[in-house]
Image 1 (cartoon, one colour):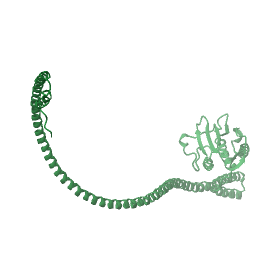
Image 2 (cartoon, rainbow, N blue to C red):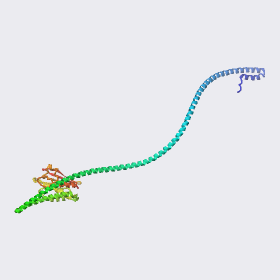
Image 3 (cartoon, rainbow, N blue to C red):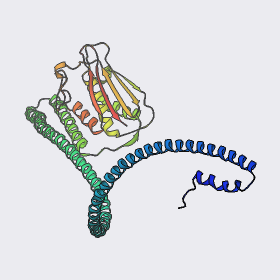
Image 4 (tube, rainbow, N blue to C red):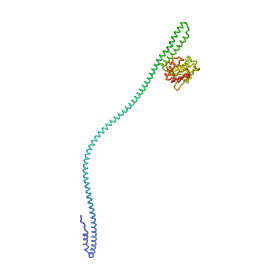
Length: 403
């Protein structure tokens, strides 16, 4: 570095130039030189003052900066030590990371292998799931079939149970009917034999009496009339017994028929009854068109009901009547027979449809009319009932038959 030139050295250099001139010029030069020197010294003083002040400030600032540098250096050294310490930790951590990286790579390889195994296992499971779905579908279909079959079997079982119950009821009804029929048959045989023995005994008695009277030469006309009456009674009884057999044995024969024709035939048959001439018989037939029914069975119902009304007429009454009403309601034929005869006692009400039951002692009969009428009504899927009875009023029977 070059050394700086001082102001004094600078002022001595031009003096050599001015000393070479004239004296005036020399004085002027000296004055100028003195002035300039004074000014230069002042300026130098001032400069030194400023420099000194600046040096102090700079020194003070430098001291402050040195303190700051020392503090900063201490801080930096601490930071440096911390960094060195952290660097050691980082190296240890880096080594651990490298070791863990190796372990992770090994674990990744093992995981990849496991993942492949799991993938294969999942594929196998998926295939098995598909098979399971197929089997489950088959199982559902089988369950539906089984459920349907179970429902059918349950329905069949219920139907069988219902059929068994119905069959049991039918057998029970049939058994009861059989017991009733057996009882009726027993009563029928017993009472038929008893009732038939009466005319036979009269036959025998009359025969012996006629034989005796004939030998004595007496008149036997009255005895022959009694014999004829007994024969008529036996014939009537045998016909009714034959009717009972035919009603039980023969099937129902449904035919087109007219009610008027059936009633007219019945009235012609009943003209032989003793009370027929004194009884006023009124027929009110509202069913004018042909109907489907068994004419023979229907004729027996009319004959028994009207015949009983004529046979049990109250001869003590001035006006004796039998009113027959026939009408059709929907698909049913309704027959109503009213009479003002002897009537039926209340205690006999439940017995009148029994076999060989006779409700009056005034007129003897076989006691088969109402029994036969009930048999016919049941066979035609109908019914017969006694609506009212009073010895001073009317006895009313009603028969309802599907047609």
